[in-house]
Image 1 (spheres, rainbow, N blue to C red):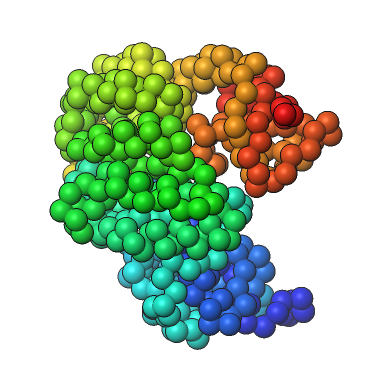
Image 2 (cartoon, rainbow, N blue to C red):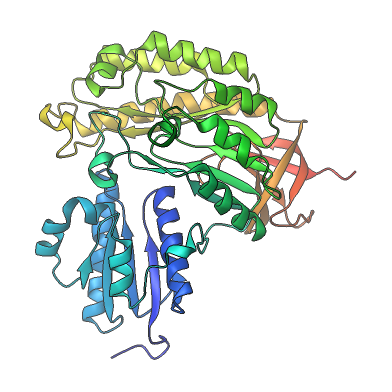
Length: 435
C-alpha cells in the first residue's frame, strides 16, 4: 500500500562517496529546480536518484546496498522509480543491469543531459555554475577539473571519470561569485588532481593564477586546497598561500606510501627522498601550513620492511592530519595483475598501527593549541555544542572546535575568535573571545 505522506513527483537525490559526487548531485538538483521540479536531498520522494561511488570495495558495497534498499521500496510500492548514476554505474553498468534489473535506468558520470531527460527535465546550458548546495551555507565545494591523467596502479578513477579536463578560470570565478552571493564564505577546491589544473587549457600548471583570481571574489574569506599530487607540484602556489590571507594554510596531498619499492609499483613517479624534500619545501615556504595526507597499507608485495619504513616516516614527519586505508584490489587497474598477497587481518592491523601513531601525534600537536586563540567558522549546532573549524581543518575529515552551547552563543555561519581551553587527540574545546 502506498504511503499517503509521499508527494507525487518529488525527486529524492541520494549522494554516496566523495566531495566530487556531492558537487555533481548539487548540479543535478540545480538543473531539476530550474525545470520546476520538486527536488530534495536524502529525504522522502517518490522518484529516487542514487549518485553512487565505485572507488574501493567498501564504497561499492555501500552503493549496491543502497540500490537494493530502494529497489525493495519500489517493489513494496513506497517509491515509483529508481534511477542510478555516478561512478559505480559508469564502471559496472552492464553488470548492474543484469544483477539489479528493477532499476528504471542506469547512467554514467557524464550522462547528466540523458538523466535529466529521464526525469522529465531539459539540460539548461545557461545554468553554468548554478547548483543547489547541500553543505552548510557557509562553505561549498568548487570542482575545478574533472577526470585524471595520472597512471597510479591502484586507482580506477580514470576508468570512471575519464581524462583530466580543466574548467576555464572565468567560469570558476563566475561560479564563485554566485556562491558568494548566496552566503558562501569558504570555497573548498576539489579535483582528482589540483596540481594538473590548466595544463590542457593554458598549456601550463595554472592553479596559482586561478587562486589569485578567486581571492578577489567579494564575500569569499577562505579558499582551501584538496587533493594535490606530489609530482610536478607547482611551487608558485605556495607563494600565493603565503601572501594571500584568504588562501588557507592547508593542503590535502594524498601520498599513499613512502617505501621506494611500493611507490615504484604504484607508479607514483616519485621516491621517498623526493617526497620528503617536497614536504620540507612546503614547511620552509609556509611555516604555518597544515598538511593532510592519506596512506594505503597492504598493497601487493608490501613487506614488513616496507611497512616499517612507512611507520618510521610517519613518526618522523608528524603530519597534522592523516588518514589510512587498506588496499582494495580493483579490477581493470594496473595493480590487479599483481597478487593481492597481504592478508586482510594484516592490512587492518597495519592501518591500526599507523592511526595509533597519528593519534598520538595529533594529541601532542593539539595540546600546544591550548590557551591560543583561533579564528573559527561555525558550521552547525550538534547536541550540546556549537561545532566550528579553524583554517587548518576541513569539514568532515579534520579536527572540530566544540563550544558549549549551554554557556556560550555563537552564530552559525559566522567567523568567531575562539580560545582553546581543552584538547583531545582529534577535537578541540573552546570559548568565544569577546572584544
